[in-house]
Image (cartoon, rainbow, N blue to C red; front, side, top):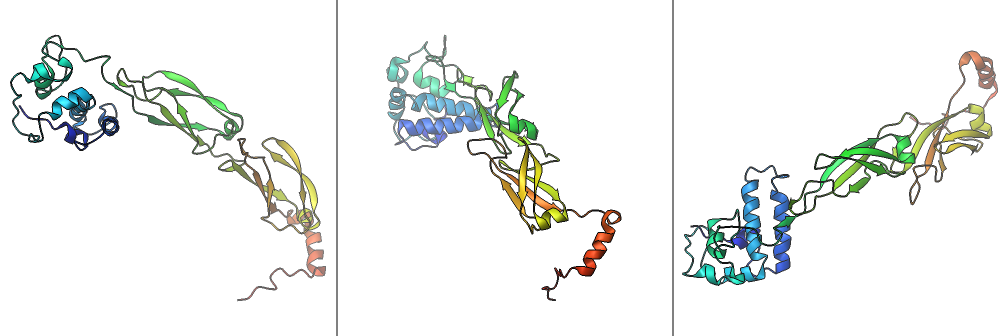
Length: 297
């Protein structure tokens, strides 16, 4: 039978610590888990990785394996020394056995009769998975609940707190891929997306909105009422305000540990000509205001 180089399978040197072996096993097991991997040889690699971990992850079995010496290489024909199975670490003789492992493993650590994996069997936490939850701006402001499908096919209600915005990620425990053996399931990483709103533009936790004002409010200054997500508030417009000026209302954005702000862009709107035509004509005759006087070719 072919000798199996368990160190090569896990991608670690023979001098690797037990902690290094554990890390390598977990990384590879997640990569090749048949439930999450799209690689055609995932199932075969997954079995090899588990078998290598059963040996190298157990200090006594590893010691027995290492006694074979460094002369053996993967691909070589292997014949265990006489009586080897009877003196391997832990006394795993014929009859104890380990189901599903290769002939090489069985020749070292016992036969298959009445085979049963040791202890509670190997454990591997299920892989995390990702999902997306779309919510409205009002739901982002006040919080909401959404229904998600777990890795086991069951549905669950998940609370989205006030202040969740685009890119917010919520970890839903136990709703990822099922674990292997007696391993726990992974988690669901739920990404929040806020649908576009006709009133406000969302940037992080800040809100932006255009606010129309009259020419006389801009020229003379005024105090006007403006809508915010928390209700109407009074806003003072300074005299001589230009169109496009940003006014910041602190803490009037999405809630949070540091609440967002509301930015109002003041946009001057002129009344229709049929309403103020004569007024415009008088202004044109008497005003010395020349906004383009400083422009050069």
